[in-house]
Every structure is written in C-alpha cells, then in structure tokens.
Length: 361
Ligand SMILES: Cc1ncc(COP(=O)(O)O)c(C=O)c1O
Image (cartoon, rainbow, N blue to C red; front, top):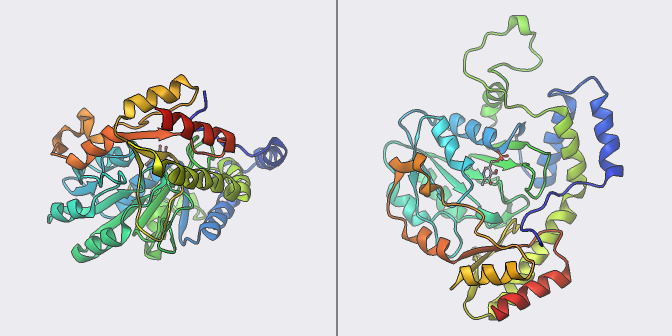
C-alpha cells in the first residue's frame, strides 16, 4: 500500500557518523550541538530567535504561556488540526474558542475569528493545516487591532511561504514539529520561534526547569515554573544532518502537490484546497475536496493507494465539550476532505496512477 505519510531518514553513511560522534562525546544533554542546530534552522528558513524543544507540543505550551495565556483566558483556535494544538491550550487552564474553518482550505476563517474576540481573548492560535498557509495578513491585523498574540502552529508547513515571507515569521510566536512523520524528523523534537527577543530568556527558563544553562546550579534561584522541554545533543545531531538534505525532500512534496493541483483541476466532482495568491504551500498532506470522498477513498485503497481524512476535528472530542458551537465551514470541509500520498516517496508513475484512479472513481 502506498502510504500517505512516511519517515524520511538520511542515508546511513551520512547519519551514523554524526550520531556516533555525539553519542560517544560524553555530551548528550542540551549543549553546543543543540545551539548549532538552532542557528542552522534559523538560517535555513530565514527565521530569528529559534529555540529547540523536545517536541512541537512543548513549543506550543511555551508559546501560549509566554503569550500570557492562563487559567480562565480564551484562545481562539481551529478544530481542523492534530489534537496537540488544542490540548496545549488546556495545559494552561485556558478555554478553547473554536473559530470556524474556511471550507476551501480547512484553515481558520478570519471572519469567524473576528466575531469571537472578547476581553478574555489572549491569543489567536492558527494552524497551516496540511502545509497550506492560513490567511495570515487578516489574522495578524485582528491580533494587532485587539493587542493579542498571534501564534502560528507550523507543524505541517515546514518551508511554506506567505507572500514572500517564511512561514513562522508573522506570528508573535511560532512552532515547528520534528515528530516522526513530519517533512523533517529528529525522531521527536520541535522549535519555538520568537518575534520579540525579550522573550528569549523566559523561553529558555521555561524549557529547562525554570533555570538557565551556564549559571552555576548552586547559585540559581527558580522564580517561575519551567519544564523538561529541552532538545538533546543527540536529537540535534539528527536535525543537523536532516537540514543538509531537507530542500530535496520538501521540494518533492511541493512538486507532487503542484502536479495534483493541475491534474485534478479537470476532474469532475473533485476539487483541492486553495490558498491566497503569492502563497507557497509545502503540501505535507495533499488535500482533496470531493463530492463523494468515501467512494474515492475506497477506489484508491482497492488499488493499493492509502487515502484518508487522517485527522478528527478536535471539536468532536469530549474533552472540548465546553467549547461546542456550530461550525458549518468545518462540517462542509470535513465531509469533502480526503488526503492522498504526496511526499518524497511518490514517484512520477505513482502520482499519474493516482490521478487515473481518481478520474475513473
Ligand atoms: C498541527 C500539529 N501541531 C502540533 C503537533 C505536535 O507536535 P509534536 O508531535 O512534535 O509534539 C502536531 C503533531 O504531532 C501537529 O500535527
């Protein structure tokens, strides 16, 4: 079965020497390799103030906390995402307020966001679902108008761009995930991106027990809660090798995604996710919108090709029962949604075969 997601590991002869080096260096915890990875990631993606974390979820928890989100506050978020986007809001004791999604993209609808801002709103948490950038200019304007934080969850959108700017550079805080099946993996890991350098020290303390590395342990006074959220040198070593080849990996997702956009445009009953002009998606999951998504899913699976909705709208979970509201855009999007294989492992022949099956289906 051709999978929808697949782990991308660098070849052994590149990865193993780098891993061995760090594993036997006597320096496994957060140290120079982590700081090198932070710099390399920031340089590669044109971002500033990048802090490596143990996971994307840890980075989300940090972003929300640094944005001042606490018990009883409201965070306007999207239900169309993986669960950690929204369970991290609960870590802070805050309430998730569901914005409806734009049925043409699956991303947060800025008009819905606008209608939901209250004096309790502390942040807008947007996701570039499946690698398709959300409508960031409008979300940024709403956040600025109300003096609240914009947080970008870029877990699906490594290498995407928004009107000439790198994804992750528009929010006050942004996060990326390097969990196993993302564009790039460090086995587990993530980064937090800060717009304001004044948050760097706070974020470093948050990721390591409330303490700063480099200060003698016997002299530290912990004044705020911190967690064990740091990245290790071992993980960072994998990240550094991954970065050397990431463009080749991501470019194949993008090439396949653009191929489908063209090839599917003439197939009746089938559409695909749309983004604004001058926006570059990184197609972590190719998003089809089908009049009959079940029939096409069955036809693809019968022909050895995985196809699925892959995520459950977070608003369907009992843990978010208090956030229930009508979300017609979400209902429309989710009914039509179908993800198909699009990554580096999908060959020219396979993508052509997939379009043929869909055209017949
Ligand atoms: C949209 C989204 N946000 C956040 C996360 C959390 O990332 P991690 O698994 O690295 O904690 C994930 C993935 O798992 C995700 O898909």
